[in-house]
Length: 264
Image (cartoon, rainbow, N blue to C red; front, side, top):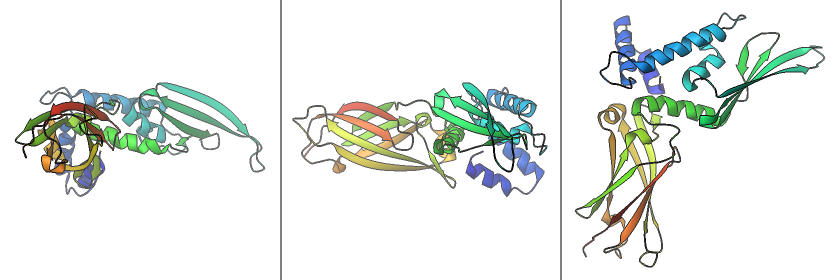
């Protein structure tokens, strides 16, 4: 669940409301809307079953899905590799304080995660989590609603010029939105340069912050970013230009070209 969904779920009054909420939760994440077969839900259930089988904690009777390893596994999926090492550390308090370390590597996220198991407790704990871990987790949660691919570094940018206005269209599925309450926010920069440096040497940088409600993003696959010619230098007449859009949240970038026909 995203933070907004969790806060909404906590204030529901009865079982019927909670059941309806959960039904809508799975429906919004169905990769094939309208289909009775929800492959996403089936995959999550498989991961939960795997975690309960292999990650359940004996000392706390905690179910595997609720363990440190389980919570990571359910969101990120199986790691690309696991390296297990046994370490003997000698201390005054414990002459032989053996511990087992597990290193999970996710090549697709360029991420390494470190778990530690002490023989005295027997449970693996997430140790020194990398700062990027929580950003990636939130990005994945949001991608399940918007359909964006966290591993795609490109933006498909389309540009249309009409009525002295540049209309930039972007795929919602490729943008990374930050969750702020019930609002999802995209943070973008638009760089406009001439394809011929002799026409226009200095690039123009515009900062665009787009705020949308979740339902708005679900209803439309495209997000439109208008640029008024009043925002551009008056010296521009008929110049082929290059427009580059940069998503500051995900570091994705896309480029398109068009020709301006501005009247004096």
